[in-house]
Length: 142
Figure 1 (tube, rainbow, N blue to C red):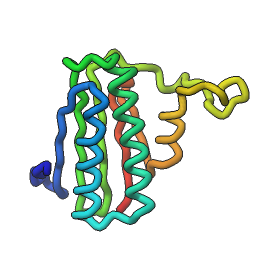
Figure 2: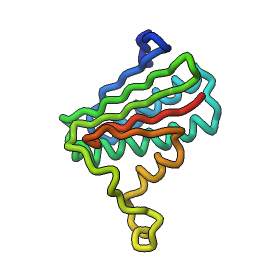
Figure 3: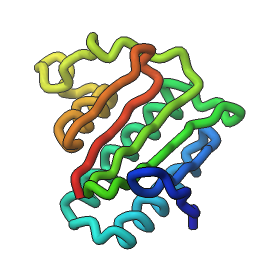
Figure 4: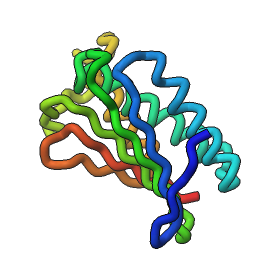
């Protein structure tokens, strides 16, 4: 269980995870804890879980190149205004999120990668990349 820190408009949960696939279960546990504590609907829970899995895998594989010595930093701020803002940041160089191939284009349909940002864009209420492209903020109304 991750203990929250009281912030001005709610509570903040923080994880620092090594860049290994085993870290996924720690994030999933946090999503479940927060969802239970704040009575998140099943639909929002499913959207959060899907988006956060995608963001974490992208951070591990693409951002940190699966280097277990590099960390992925995750914050979840639950606000009194019934919103959860998740932040996922890696130690990688970032990427140009404005030039991602469209995974629905015919030439990309059979590719095994390239759908994470597309999924996040469609399931989160709002998403914001930092300028460098190594941090994404995901907003969900609860």
